[in-house]
Image (cartoon, rainbow, N blue to C red; front, side):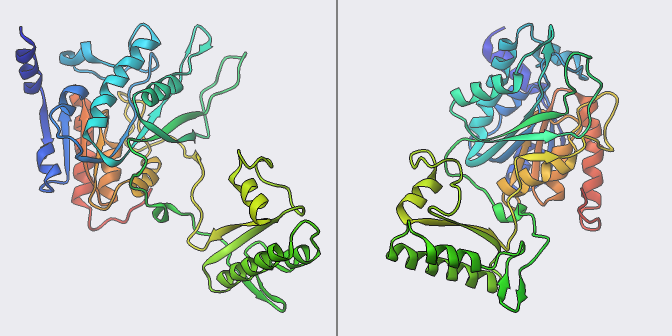
Length: 376
């Protein structure tokens, strides 16, 4: 059999459920589920067509998945050596990088594995390999699952996994305002003026500036002006809180070496800096505490994404009506979350059984899209 014939046969194995990928890309359908090997299906998609990829590939030697016999030789996760697993993952993400838009993001959830009592570091083996392939790693999110299985008596319980945020170019789509955490307190007026959400009024900073022996007169003037402008923004509702660091009065964040710390350099050059908390809210941290439970969890698929985990990646790194791709879609959590949030989606899996469950939940979302509130 020639390579060309083999490729044609592989294409014949791709089964469209719901709409086709082409219809989703054209905006004619909202979702498509594709039954086939991830690499083969990805090769049928055009370049630069996907806004965001969110996925969790099978973990190395950790779980058994429902795999159709047609694709048993293409299953990822049962390799003899970690290096083979990494190479198979790299091959898939080579195609993902091709179909992802330059402005796009990749969110990769991957778990670790103890082998012969040795923690293998599989997430970082994969992450470093993808960096070698040109991916830019923007965040390592710790997914604190808040509970875990009982571990052996000679080590601690493991209750977290990694979620890596990769991009393919330094400029990419990121809507930080869509994921901000609204402050629980607002500034308040007092007899002495206005105080921030944590009680900062600026009086102490004025005294420190006036009594400083390390600031020049010009630096003092500049510091007072910046402080008054900040308090004005607090009064106007643009900020909810702030902290001021003055040379010689407060400890410098991240050390005092201007070559290492941008704040230290600012302190050295200007004599002060101000950290501000926008009234729009706070950017979430890189630790997410979410219990890994989902009503669509099935005995045949024990690694279901909780939809809550997907909200921030979808909101922050894909535009309205953008297209989400999951090449290891399983029972369809990423697709359902994408549809809930007004995006379109394409999912790929080698198990028809998983895709049948995914189809059921997606059809439920589509049927109630305009009547049910978004709740995660």
